[in-house]
Length: 117
Image (tube, rainbow, N blue to C red; front, top):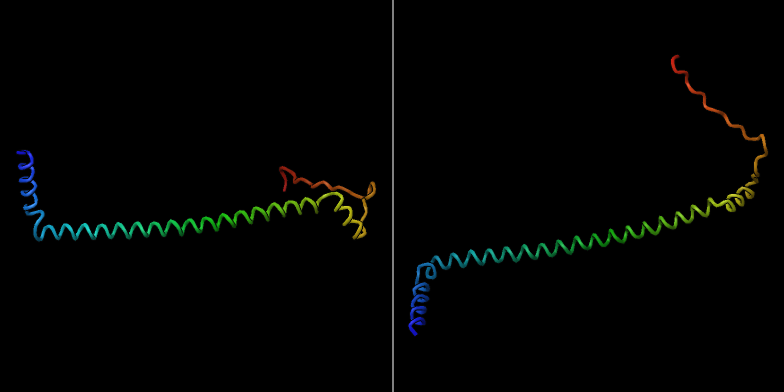
């Protein structure tokens, strides 16, 4: 029982101290409230920025996937246009035919002389 009375006296002494009464208490409480409000606003702002950044990352991911699909389709189209059967069909359409032996001449590029002008 004595311990409880001593504890109660100590609690009353602390509660009656200058820190928990009057102007000091209101200043401490005001500072804590302002700090809590600043923390809350910062947290809300960070959440909004995170969602905004996530939205733009998703949009860029979709654009990347679309471009990847288009690239794959263009590669398939290029390969089909460059196939020998397709080239032969187009050549016949434009009246072209294979060259005969001796019709193609290859010219070598002349190399400049090492020491002269």
